[in-house]
Length: 408
Image (tube, rainbow, N blue to C red; front, top):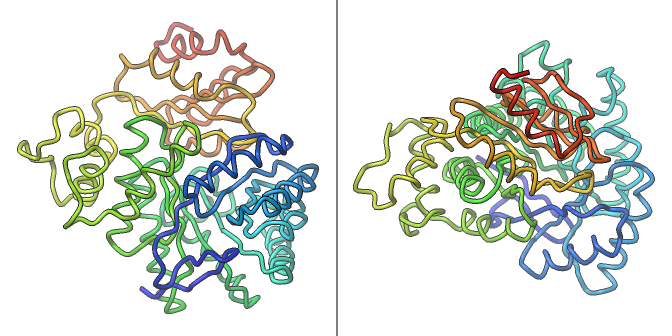
């Protein structure tokens, strides 16, 4: 598979270059000092790209200030602006960052208008040398594409191809693409579909940003990331990666570098990360049905890898976003409480999401969702339908349990 090389602020992604490791701030962008400090910490810890959220046009001046202060302090790590819905925000911030992450399908309910806005953004990025990441997540594809193809890996790839074609029509090649899901099987199959489609149509692909979104935290978040990302990297799919953990962002870097450098024939296979990178792809690809009893990793680790590969569930499956500048409550503490209070359940998927902006759309696999509204309030979802809104945070886990156990 031939992959285009993309220069993002001096960092080369794709081509024959090594896998690039990135992460994302969880500070509020309007707190310029805190965001600068965290960007500096992440850069010094080895992050090769750092993403910051840009909730709206009111934050563009702050992003510019963050960028300028970092450069003045000798921190040259490229910044990626994370945009969810506003094309105008993306267009205004593009001159002040090295890369913009967007889902163009969210730019406008009318697909034709969304395409026009995307072409406007491309024009600005061409002018300033800014790269674009086309970032599509399972569960937030929009009705235009799901009405045609359903909410499937194939639909994710087809959606990406529409935006890729526009980039090529505009002769814009500073493009990276991601198709993330919290379900490792969905995520892997989506990237495989897109690699086939791009290669068949163009003979080459744009670089892929690979990750398991909303992976959670602790061992399970790391293992899930190892399984999904390693499966693709071992097939030659993936040029830049992020391990998304509901923890301080600096914690994402060590497992990400391990995955990027993992070699099936050379790396130790009995450590937590090594075993997940080695056995996870075999399980996900159904080359084996069980981890051999003599693998030397213990039952707990074997069970966790089996669950991450979606082969056998032995506890609740949790989806949790890592948090960002849109998060308005203590996401990490809430997630730990939800896990502790629901650990006795089985055959259930529970999502804990940081904000109402993109949380409901991105917990596509969840049976139940706990979504922060801000101001100390939480919404509780069953599948993708809100069943309780404005629940005080101190009562929310009790209400969630009552609903799951049929007591309300």
